[in-house]
Image (tube, rainbow, N blue to C red; front, side, top):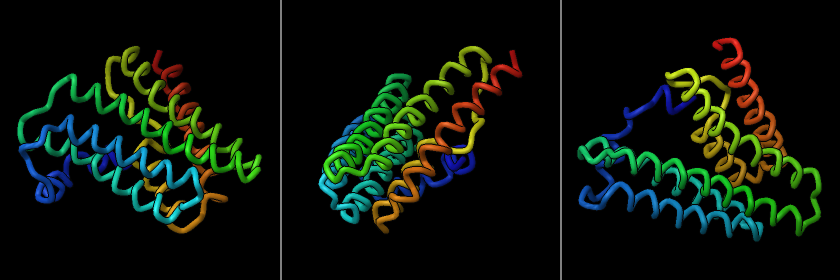
Length: 187
């Protein structure tokens, strides 16, 4: 999983691109605005443009934490806000795709996108619950948000959703079951 491997290693590069006087929470909210724009492009089938906005939104998702860590402005509320906005972001991306696949009458990709929504939300939920029960980090699983965003962006840029969405559906839900199994074995 990318977030566990990269952690804050990219912070110094990200921070160079951005003004540091803007609060991390502002970057979080700006990322949500960019996410909504990306979602609208996805909804109306402008996948390539949507893909650029997906990666732009992903940059903001990294920027908020990078700014917070390098300027000493981390906070519990900031972490909470980032997590909630990430869930909204996932929903916006996938609702945009659901809208598109409903209107082009692609039942298979609509179903896969709905299944991906379930997996992406439950990936976060099972991690949070596992960490409460186990009282330590739960980094178990094949795919988390950074990987989902990268795959989603690639799928949009290169019009590969026919392959990417089913892969996301499978991997995100496998991650949920990996975490369920992990907690079961640890308790």
